[in-house]
Every structure is written in C-alpha cells, then in structure tokens.
Image 1: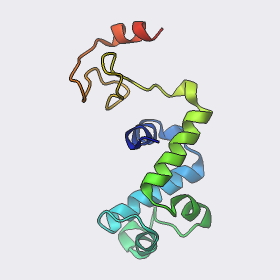
Image 2: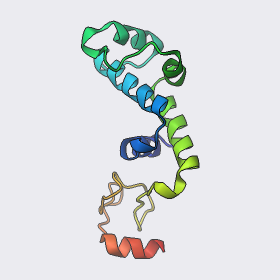
Image 3: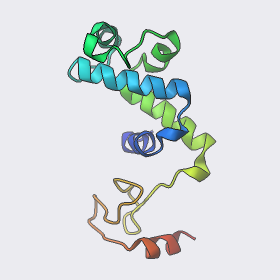
Image 4: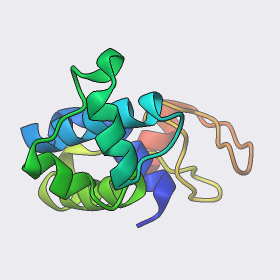
Length: 127
C-alpha cells in the first residue's frame, strides 16, 4: 500500500481502528518519541522501560504482534483492513486534475499539481 494513503487513513479515520489497533498505534507513537524516531523491536522494548512513556508503551503480546515489523507495516496492514471493512465511511479526497490524494479529507488544493477546487464542484464531479 502507498505510504501516503496508509498515513491518510490512519490519521483521519482513527475511529475505524479496533481497540487493539488503536493501542498498537499509541504504542508506536510512544516508541518513536522515547527512542527519537526508532520503531524496531528493540526500540519498543526500550520505550516500555522509559518512565515518561509508560502510559502508552506496552508489553501486551497482541500489540507487539501488530507492531513487530514497525510503523510502516502496521500502518499499511491497518489501513488495508479499514478500507476493506469501511470503504463507504472513508472519503479519499483526490485532485480532480491529477487524481493524486490530497493532504487531508477537506483540502481544496492539490499538493502535487497545485490545482485549487471548490468543494461543491468537487462533490458534483464525484457523483
């Protein structure tokens, strides 16, 4: 899966994650903060022992199974599941000109081609 698409789905539709996926995401965020950007298994173990990040870093086997291959893999697998299970609830905001994914669901300007669109015109084109 495209990393930008995976980030978009996780960032803007966290309510569609399962409870364990949400905990895994928070665990990875804590790990990244505690270890200054590392997300490998060793970094995750270090984060559990850091007192500043103990609240979200965990040694729960279910969480560690989801996070074992790092953030990119977790995002890709979780976003794939969300899109498969909740396709009608996820709005992928694509540029009407170049069809690339916009930065946010409400964006009205493409970060790739610079095209600016009105949300009413964009919605009408998608019908």
